[in-house]
Length: 458
Image (cartoon, rainbow, N blue to C red; front, top):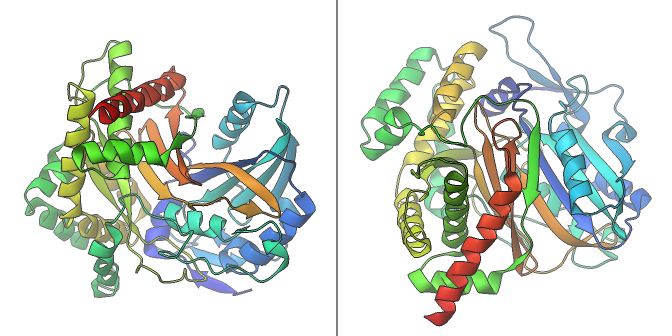
């Protein structure tokens, strides 16, 4: 136990942004073809999660005044059993049954009187089991939490009965961030934090926004741009839908990439763009480029996670090629736009803005976050998971996915997750706005199939 400590400025932003219609909770699900051993899993969670990272046994203490700072404090009544929920999926226990369970949890807030996380142990998923994890964004960013989850797993079925695995970014089996290959280029951005003033006022925030206004194209994206009104925009509600694709071979995605000298990430972003374009067509909207937010890891490559975890990431605006005419055009445009972001200081700038917001009052923080959130339809993450199969408490993992929350009135979140030679794409959408999320999955797979046929022919 670590007593009482101040919640970091960036972590406080995500704590503040919790709303009934867009909870700041990172959800992930993994499933198994065989029944899991829940007693064994509980032991792994205790040893590798709770004992290793103090924040998983700490609760939030709100400040007594509007100008005060929230704190983490040890939960005096902490019990692992309070955070492990067990349920049986309704018959027939298929993907749809799992999706419906996940969707029901996505709109349920975590208990602020307790540490902000849950693990759901689900029986009845086919012949096997599934695990749903829910972590509040104030604990850590999605990239760090993906690494935390990976640290619960092992290369062999008996691995959890031996010593704790050493899973750090950049090592075999480690996880990547939203823009593959970008972390090393901007890792120095994390050193900006000590250079920021100890106490930041709204005036400092204005200075950062003025800096944004002097950086050319970044100013257009951060300050002047706006998303067009489409069938993917509207007033959101608390209910969310979660759908995902079938596994696709990474070898096929790489084959497509060679068509345009593109990365795996470029290909998948292009295919997501094609899926969104098809949705606009099917629902009477005009095709136009839509913007998504992409998280960028600012931790030093290869460094272990700190015991306190926390958020060390920035968000950049990526204009998706949803207005492009053909699949090949969308691929070339996606590569060009991703390359442009990799050479931009945008990530460093947005990290400074988020850090500044955490040191202002809540109303101002919400106002500014809403301003930027309105410029994107949601968040797109890309997690490069283990290249080979992993085991959780002795049971082989068959598939993994996760979703980060949106903010403001954002309606579409995308998760790209590669694992064991395959990749899946999941969509988290607002049920009040996006009426047919399964069509996004079908359109994504159709776009990928089209590109693969062209690549093989070429």
